[in-house]
Image (cartoon, rainbow, N blue to C red):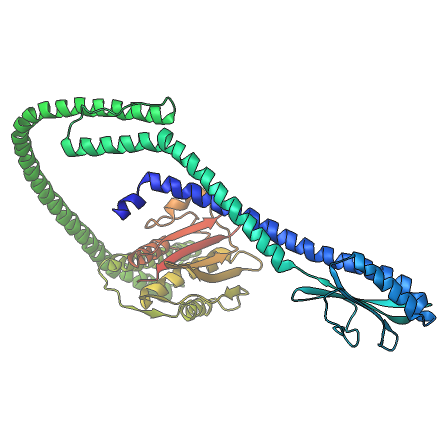
Length: 502
């Protein structure tokens, strides 16, 4: 029962209004009390300071001429200030020169020596010391002690604050009683109506509209909604009859769809198997063709070398030139076949996943390429590369192909520069090879990774057009990506990624 009352909107409105009123009054009252207490202390200090200043000026001649009688007369004037309990004038040696005590104060209740200059609060009293200066020398000290009724003022304020709080809460309760009639009661009526509709399933019930405000609009909306729900309920009951007839037809259609799905899955499986078989046959065919072509190419290379060595003197210049072309093209064909074999093997070669020191692998790959180009003046910059997991041999092939391209296409520069670096994010490692070579037109970037696709003339930059295709296939098998960024004559940067979870 108590839980139900606490969860009702009536209780919540009462608590919100009372809590808001109480909080506002407490904050305002506390601020006023703090301000008044602070002001009271400052006013007491200022008052005593002013009185001490007057006494210091008036008693300076008395101290100078050793006239305690005049000093006593000045202190006696404090009788008109009942809040001052005691006063004294000390001479320069710290002895009491003249004293005053309010009626009813115990005698001798004066400090033996002045302790400081200024004000000090102690319990219900406040003391003030002021030096007496005459002719630029200290003649003595004025001491005043007055009442400091801070606790009394605080008690008075708390009483006033409590009375105001009680009065405000009473007014708030009167306002709440009015709110119960104008706001809470209609809302509770709507809640009761909703409960009856849910229990009886009777959508003909209606809420009673008593106001023309937002609550009244809510009542109209509830009644309209009940009318609409009632109409739909009738329509739903009418459609249940036809729905029963449709269920049988739907079951038949669903059975047909299930059979079609089974047939479709079987067809997809069959087509997938056919595609895998075709890919396997294509790779086997490429491997076989490449392998079978190597023997004739070796024969061409061998016989052309024999012809050049044994019949060199019998051949004229044109014949030797043509023979050189035959040898060059045969070697080029051999390189194409080797690259094609390597490309076809990638589809069948099992990967041996290990931990790879990418910095060491990139350095050794560059050194193996650089030793075949003695005398080059390449500025090679290798940053610290994140370690990766993958097939060391295949990843080494990636570095060899990318660095070989960087060396080849930057060789025409006066000061070739190649930079290798990498970073890591949450999911993958990113590596790049940047050169200051001839670059390429970014419009044709999609052709970079096709087998035998080239963007530069082979007479100017020799190659087979398979290297980047190998790079993309190796990186893709590892679950990574490859892309490039370049402009003509502004160098190129090739990026590739390897997942951390390889």
